[in-house]
Image 1 (cartoon, helix red, strand yellow):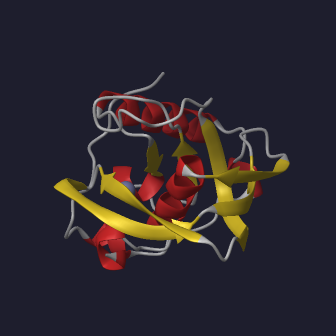
Image 2 (cartoon, protein in one colour):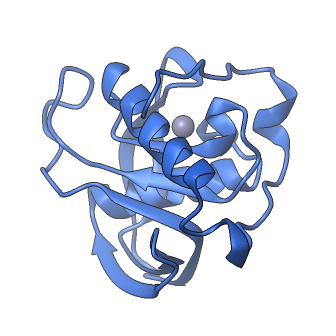
Length: 159
Ligand code: ZN
């Protein structure tokens, strides 16, 4: 059902485009199930802790947030992966924190990026239900990084 997908690299046009919303009729579609399963497989194979659909050449507002310790992020906290359709960050703490980021689309580059420490994010789950959650620390950082991808922004533009 899932397949490893090619990952767009720095300089490719798709990484600079604003992705479009998932439409109601696309929720629960086989296409979307296949896309999210393949994004997850691709993220795991590359030791990512998050991935956005434009990174696999699909210009849609879909992200996966999946913090866990691995060779790229040994200190990452473990969480259940969350698949978010049309995520919107509705509140950000004024408090920002610097933290190291990398990106599957920007090989061999790490940088310190200031991000809001705490956020609230609203999204649709794969069943099309609206969900609102609060996140802080590394998972909040991942959401901000991945939502940036949906708006065509790479972390290297925030250094
Ligand atoms: Zn990235």
